[in-house]
Length: 277
Image 1 (tube, rainbow, N blue to C red):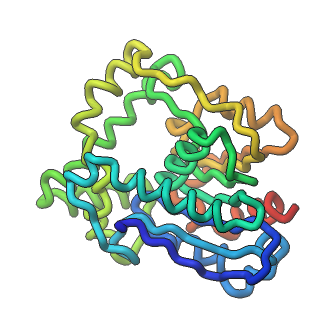
Image 2: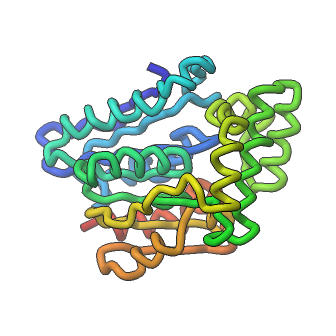
């Protein structure tokens, strides 16, 4: 498998749902170091839980990048679903507590939606909401910021540009990493952006290719996002969160997209409070 499952702690005789950490582009599960530190594991929100992380292919911890043909065949979505299904089967409650950022959150929402919310006890969604649209009715001219994907995919189709692409992500998006010059290798999941031109552009201009929003999820959600991440959310999703007493939404304009790692001192207290119950 290209996706790596690591068990950080297996609690014998556990009665609480396992915690599963999912990362996004261009990170690895190392972004959660503060959240799963040994001194944190006995805090009320993690006490008695088995702890797992899933690593998509990444240059940091899991450099097992799939071939383009495998990507086109949906290999990563199948692996992700199989791994989460297996974790649900092993869970003493038949449910999981998910902490997911960016691409990990995108897959987690897709998986949860397909199951009707079964298998999820609670979810901490970082940066990405349950539904997102590219149309101008929802986002105005910001709907066209999806074009960034065409730039990112150049690291895949034109490797000689990968360092330039990486530099723009660092300078424009606030990403920090000792290995950032090589992050073009992590852009593999943008391989399909040229193909999406005829799907996303009509959606942005004419509202075509829409799917009904996923706002009837039965599990509590803590949603944290930066101002950067408005495109990955919708007003209906955020209104739903604001209307439900079991959910919480927090938007910070002074954060960038990588706030879960760069501002763990502020994010972790929110996560602790939400998952301690």
